[in-house]
Length: 411
Image (cartoon, rainbow, N blue to C red; front, side, top):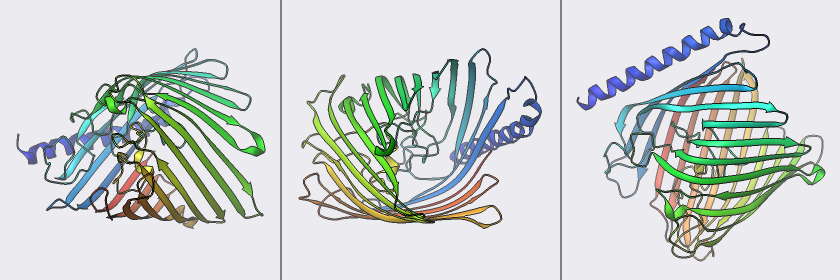
């Protein structure tokens, strides 16, 4: 089958998925009447996105136009048990990019490969007061997702074949999860599509009243396909907010962690991590600044292989892996969020500037500018434009510019 036929087949499969999602949405009000106080819940979304990457070292730019369609159903609760099943399909309408699976290594990477797969399939049990047990393929996001996240930015989100326990009591939420397999963003057609895992996650969220929130954590990651990123990380994050006047709020957050080797890691690891962030918000406007520091020992850098990395160290994805001499990221920016600028329409604007260097601040890695404009409608539709420009200095990854345009709908 030639490339055009493959593209057409994938597109038709995605369209079929979209049709099923729409039918599910129409059927939901009818099926919702079944049971006493219980409902079948149908959910779905579609996202069409264009991504352009102009990166030094490549003669050609990457041009990716991809469509992601996702649909799922959650059953009513029966004796405390509930089942969720969700599938997704991703089609490449333009394939001039390296998906890590299509063999186009002469083009920059856009990690949105074509795939049709089971995104989530989980069973939960809530028959114990204050406790939820979850088994199966599931979405796990902890805290600000710096260490554990679903990478929701990519078309194929990261999910986990795992067993999870969440329990709550006065002012405290405790989470434990055992991860057997990580379903990565590259999809099941890519050789990088999954991590076989023997990993444990422990996370707590403690409400400390006027002092804010404290979230201690311990992540023991043993990843068969990434032994050098198999690590034991323990630390804590603190955050708090205070009203300075009727319209102005100050939010502060700080994070400290230590990382050592774990599992099959062949190297000795003893690395540190720290972050501090401050934000002042007044009405629709917010101004923020902070610093994130990741240690390096000359062989390995502090690693967070299961994080939602797009949220950190710039949208250009220049620092998905911490340099071996570490990374310091000073950043500042502003946001503006305007609600109801039209009929059920919200507008969001963001500017963020980064200055990168090694952990000791001896070598400049360069700078980055990130811009975002997003429109959201009450009906579930959103239109978004992003731009990221990373400019290399004395050292660091290759310079690159990225542009995204996306249209999405969720029900």
